[in-house]
Length: 307
Ligand SMILES: Cc1cc2nc3c(=O)[nH]c(=O)nc-3n(C[C@H](O)[C@H](O)[C@H](O)COP(=O)(O)O)c2cc1C
Image (tube, rainbow, N blue to C red; front, side, top):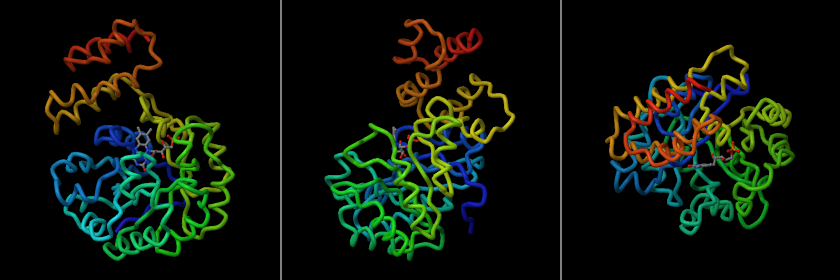
């Protein structure tokens, strides 16, 4: 059994629904991510429609510490998910108790669990009993009230091996700044490792996050279009051939997915990968409406060459 090594402040690629696919996680891992998290997986969907979830659970050997993130509010489904053969390849399980999306919250899942500490605690201890592997919890500052400290303590008492704290309230969504003082407070009050999350996009914000004393740092939006950000933050001496990495991302996805699905899915990634390139509005429109991936790639090759 593997454990996440917290000695050197590991960098973790955040779970991002519709973003952190197997190709994206592969590139982040090749460029220094010490751990990677799947997009959130519904415990119920895993039980009733495993093929729908299956593509989100693909992994490659490049991933150093593979975390599957599960959401749900029913202990029995959470237990089944942890024991599901779909997740047998993972090193660790994270429970989503921070998702602010209304369709999740209205089912009593994600951040809604921050309002029900007793149920949240039962879910954590059920998940812990279902596996020998580490179990973590990802949460926010609070849903109806800012109860992050009480919530963090509950996670620890219920058996969580580590926690990830995105220091924004549910009402904030992604607006305003992540509250690094709140992160420092959680770190100071727990014995288990605390991973800090929110607004790390460059060396300056990385240092500010580390100054809270956290044991690890999770990066989400700062990796969009640049899953190699981990190498930059670790000051690794690597050259990134961006075009080659875009091709690699697509090549990995092509092994698993139909072209008709992929050409729609990949559009957002193509726009993120090229957001800093000087490109004509014509080319940007072509990427945004990508109808032929190879066509887009040859246009991109030129654009990256000229940059
Ligand atoms: C497109 C997108 C999808 C996300 N999906 C998830 C998810 O599936 N599970 C989760 O716990 N958080 C999810 N998040 C939240 C991120 O994991 C992270 O907590 C948040 O973006 C703050 O970190 P950042 O400032 O580094 O982006 C998502 C965020 C974005 C932008």
